[in-house]
Each structure stands twice: as structure tokens, then as C-alpha cells.
Amino acid sequence: MNLLSETRKAITKSNHRIPQIIFIGSEESGHRMSWEQFYELSDQEYNNDYGHQEVATDLIIVFSDGSRLFRPSESGYSYWSYSGNFVSPPINHEIKTLFAGDSHFPTLANLNK
Image 1: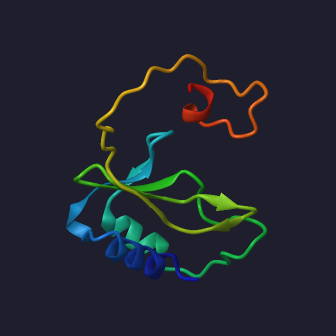
Image 2 (image 1 turned 45 degrees about the vertical axis):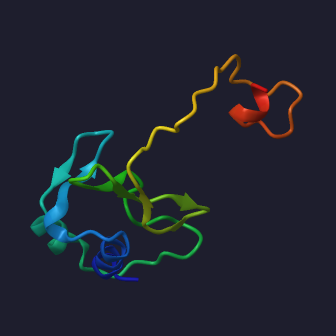
């Protein structure tokens, strides 16, 4: 898999364009780069199969609308995933607990009926 090619496809799939990118790097550590730097560094093949993850796990791309691409990992298999903007739900319910106790489905809705 070529990281640059994979990234361009993920950007297109998210309905964004490269000029809309405002951040590439790590939100955690503060490392950042321009698109030009990313273009140069990412144009290489890597193995994205299960096993050892080769691409930085904290790499994100943030767009001007606040949405982002990030790289989740499942047993070493990595890929771009898209997270859109947060939209607040129209209804607000009180939260009384965050812990599952005996519940087999520990969602906030199930825990706070």
C-alpha cells in the first residue's frame, strides 16, 4: 500500500480537498508538517496487513471544517478513518453513572434508564 495514494483517496472519500487541510501531524505531541512535507514523506509503500503497524499511530489530518482523518489500528492493520464534526443531539438526558456494574451492554443509555 502506498500511504500517499491511500491518503488522497481518503481525502476524496471524505468530500474534502487538499487546500482544506489545516493540520497534519500529532494532536498529542504537537508534531506537525505541511502538505508538501507530507507529500514527500508519505510517497512510499508499506504493509498494511495484520501484524506490525508501520505508519505512526497518532497521525491525523484535520480539515478547516473541524473534521478529521485518523488511523485506527486493529491487530496491526491500519487505515484512514473519517470523523465528521460533532453535532449536539436535540435531546439531553441526565447521566447518573458511567460504570457498567451488572450490565452486559454498558452504553450510557442502558446505564442511565
